[in-house]
Length: 132
Length: 404
Image (cartoon, rainbow over all chains, first blue to last red; front, side, top):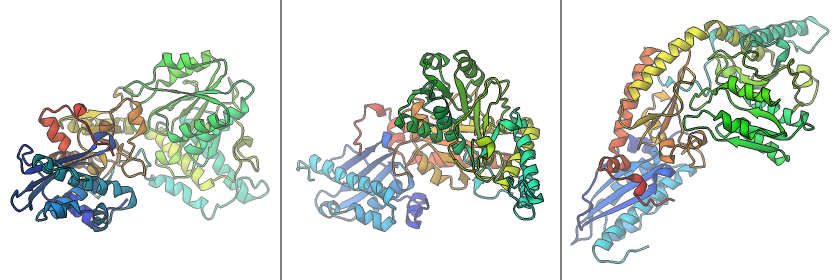
């Protein structure tokens, strides 16, 4: 199966690989997937507690090229967005942007899950309710 | 000079040897006859060519030419052996024994037998891929008609103890079929010394053309018969009808002759290269060989790089054509059933690469492969959350994963 140019670009030059301190109150961490399934994503956001804007985002992913590209793209999109705006990111937008074939849609679903899990982790730390 | 991508997937298929192509060419045009045309020179020429090829093929496995049934490949040969024995020996019994690391052509033929009312026992191999001979013997019942166990495994290269297996089969008066697709032409196979009753193999894994293979069917001690699965003109002693693929068969014969002459030298060369590749890659932290390394085809290495996903890794080594045990490309996300049936954890099965060296592999290519794989593994581990957690001393088995 051939990968799209955008997937290859994100795979070859992944944006925002790294680790934020998950103990900080303004950092939200989302760890989703399972090694048994062949993909695990960890997505982290660092939020400005006053403005609610995501100042930084990092990821690490175990998975195929499409999984790596989906999470790399997600970190790009997250930066500069408010937490509310970030909740709106839909997996189909990732599918479209990366031209993922049907068998790789689960990679985008996983990225969306990672975003929502990270946001909810942040909200929980802030004493707010998790949102679905 | 290296030319990219480098082909290290010779278990999938092999490039054709130019000598094979040369032998085949006349049979596409000037010598186009039907080998079954008995009444003119075109037919006789084709028949002679097929007879000669049949001898070349038989010689490689120490069989009689009359024991070679040409087929479209090993899949057809496996189907013919299993379904053909099941039908032919229905009066004797309906039980077949095989192993759950066989090729799908064997496993799915066995599933078919089960649907038809037959019984199949699927043995599980040990962790190293070898079967337990006592398990095999214990599985035999008075209803058992066939044992089907592959000679050399396509994913891990493990060679089963065929002589011990055939001794058990003989002792209990059960036929032995072996899928020797990966082994014939790579290691010495002798159907008589090894008491094999039926054997599948194919040309395109030994530098011959695709679309032609054979089923060896023993004629003496015991005389084995299979019920035809393709009915028609009664070709191949009535066991496989259909106009013979004359150019393919000529190529198959030539490929067998070349292997016969060059196998020993080639195996020695390839096992040295393979061992070097393997020992260098094992310098990478947390890398493991899958399958027994003492009883193995000379040209195969299957290695798992922990905490790196196979398909992602393959993308990082795009200059190498290899195969991965991770099946993220298929609709199912299941990793290789062969590796899983060895008892490998799914994450290790997802992290595996299979290297299949071949006649045209060079030392320079191996050097390149070593560097390329090392670089890619390190790069992917730098972006693997599992690697980071492992390095922090977190037991990944204790983590509650969100399976999706």
